[in-house]
Length: 209
Ligand code: MG
Image (cartoon, rainbow, N blue to C red; front, top):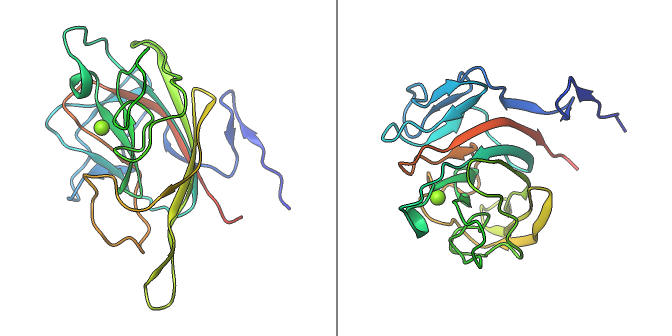
């Protein structure tokens, strides 16, 4: 058994792949193209530039532990899905919703929901204009040698340190997925839903255990 150490001031495990360290989008590309990600980077975070499209990591994942932090603007004149919408997609196929759902009774399309599949069991939202975090533990679907699925994907999620999904079974994609090649590894995808969402401190550990 190897030891997992921590790097620097941030509690990043030594075996993590740093996907965004606040300085560059070099590890990312525009969805569906080889073009560079069009989002802007400043002050240690990335921010959606509306209309430039979703962005994907060049690194591909199967089983993974993912840490991502996000910041939502206050959109006081907007409601529901129009209020600070983005998303964190595992394998580019399974969306954990990003939305300003502060103080709402969470539904299947609110923040931390697996979109249209499962609401978080509690609402752990912070008010907009605060940094929030997801820690996601994703178990990729399994297939036999004929390519037939033998196990659905599963995931557990901590939202701001609060356990909101426990080993949730994910029978299929949640909408807006990159493809239906479910047997293949996929990227981490962040959604451009037209709102000025920020992300920072993104890292992942490929899980072999
Ligand atoms: Mg979304």
